[in-house]
Image: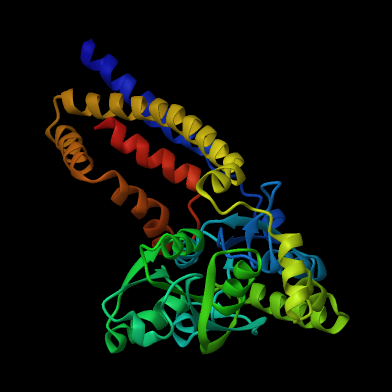
Length: 373
């Protein structure tokens, strides 16, 4: 009698669990969502992307992709992930494209489809405004700050042995700048328009020498998303022809004169670069993340309870195969680090199946499996 009840419970859970998970998965309205692309960007890379005083992300990149989307008849969902995280998300096919002041390089062209160039740039070295560094030769024995995954970081690493300096990496530009301003690092390497924009906006740094490794920025998409690149290139061409591209550039960088650049920087960049200023600017995002984390935790506890009951029943059934499944399940997931499991589900699984796994679903699966054990 007891065995029969256990089997009924087990059968009921096996039927109910897939149905409940299915309710959380997105519906099959693929056709309706085909013209909405998820675009990853950096978080602090003014004037290309940054949070303004209203905690809204603005900048050349964002204005450009939105204008192209409007011209070509598609929609975009902007995801400010940070440069390195955005590139990784694109590699895992969690997003459709990246526009984040990304330099067009042979290495990136092997991984992604790159658009036509939309802005020319170069790498410059910057030091503290009152610092004594006057050239690359003065960096010997010192530490230099770079930003993870950028062309400027690649350039710094390519010359560090020649000039005898070491590098320290940061995930965002603001922390990199502050490390130099506070004297923890002797210098930093950054793209010329970004560095010049920050200095015009009052940042206590100065540029040393001329731009090196001159190149161009491009929009990146996954290899199987040629339609998006085609739309971007067509839209960019139209914006250049009708003058809208020039208006976007002038909005943030002026017309090229020093006076107009300072005026544009003052009008556009109003974010306080201090810790509390950045905290205030990103408060809405932090609260949104906290809310999603709480919802995720509650849902994961619910499913973890169901999985726990299921595995528990398998473990007590008078069946060696069922007991072996339960024991193996517990053994595997108890020893697997949480972050490794999350990374595999969010980035590894999409690479294997060729389809996105929504972050919320990936979080539920990860916490469900780990909370059970």
